Length: 267
Ligand code: ADP
Image (cartoon, rainbow, N blue to C red; front, side, top):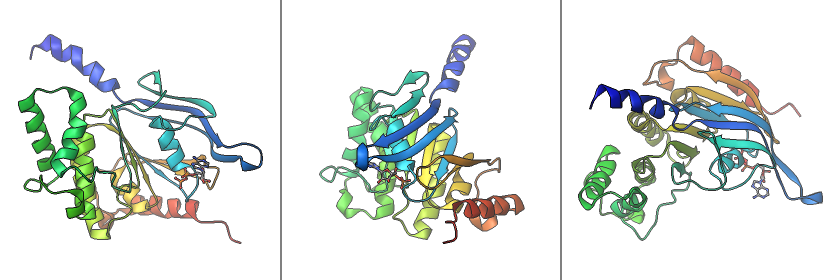
């Protein structure tokens, strides 16, 4: 590659996946059925960074994520990705939910191929990328299994392979490991960190789990009880890989403070 093309490409890569959430408020229904799901929220997700959103159940985390994904629309405020207002679902914005959302009638490989279709690759590249994506998440040899034949952790590996293989600029993850046991969760954390560092999408990760947020994220936003607003933001500069078993004093302090912020008020 020539020096000129490198210079041309780098600034473009650097701005890919910037999410700007400006004064976004979301209200469902009206009259006595009115629910304010989200109080006005203003945050930026910087390109290629990993942001965790933590808050009590029902505070509006999924609603905010659904608005970034283009599934619901703000009642007030704006959401843009790379300067373009979100007007509906965008194939460059990947979404992973707690429930695996794989197509049960496709094999693991079929699920990944489905996501790769939109890239319009030639046949050889298409096959190679699909196999590589599954190998990257440790599922080489399992390509022909159907979701019903895979464990919860393996299904989420397929979901991660499927979503990242489509080269998303933004990845939205709504408690993706919430249904997994503690050991599987820890191995999914290192897997996710490895894949994210290789692909560098901008990630928004919703969780209830303080340690999970502190292990994974560059930045953690803590939300209030419903209707949610951001009450505190923590920047985490600690080197990766991180482990909750080896938290230092600063991480322990942040863990304590986040738990206190999330604690329900005394009755
Ligand atoms: P969280 O993800 O933090 O648990 P949600 O975003 O799922 O919270 O929900 C926030 C609030 O918005 C809840 O009171 C929920 O019942 C309400 N809500 C979410 N989606 C809808 C909808 N489509 N219609 C009406 N109310 C909704």
